[in-house]
Image (cartoon, rainbow, N blue to C red):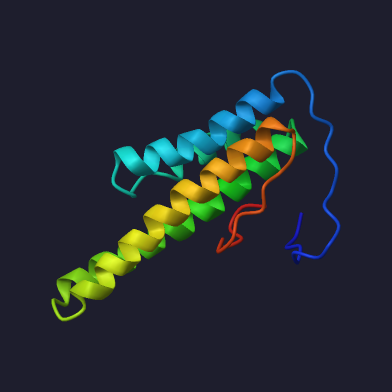
Length: 132
């Protein structure tokens, strides 16, 4: 699936069985992984789900790809913050980047969990389209 602008019609997926539960756990794994590893491993859980379900289930593939792409973007934001921290002059910028990343991480993942619970795919903002 390619990039869809926000106004484009969303594809409909057949959600059955445990798909909703796995989708919710995918989003939660990204959030928990990022919080436990201080922003470094948030993409690991969604990547595992994508690797397992990419050929079997289009709904879980789209859910895990979106979560992975968003978490990868937040990881890059975290790296940029660390670079700013080591330049010493940009320490305030690093703090702002960490706050923005933390707020985006929590808010977007909570919204994604709510959408996944309804059987819908959440379109994360600020995601690099690495996985499709």
